[in-house]
Image (cartoon, rainbow, N blue to C red; front, side, top):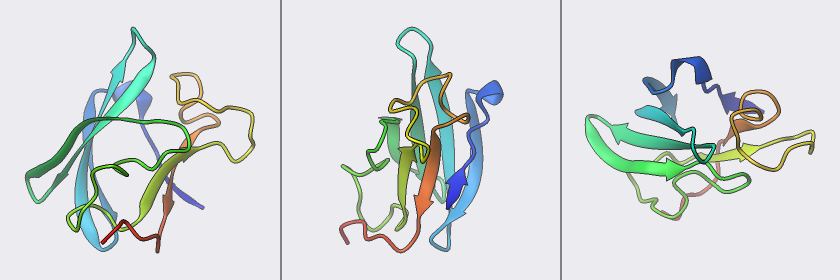
Length: 107
């Protein structure tokens, strides 16, 4: 399965990634006080979402999706089953932001 690598040492940072034949810009932030990550999403310079929390097993942008968002589902998950939270210690070690192409986004 494909996943989006989050470079924790670069946070906060922005990167572009092609998803569903469209280039999106992600901006990743980390809240060290409460140990969670958030993501902002842009498409062609238009802000689509800000401060969306990475929650284990829950599709990223799942509650705010329309035709402008990626068609693929983006889900933080640990295929080994050893972690069930997205934290500084688990993200990029056991928990990854998986890309599930071909999933519908409510269009």
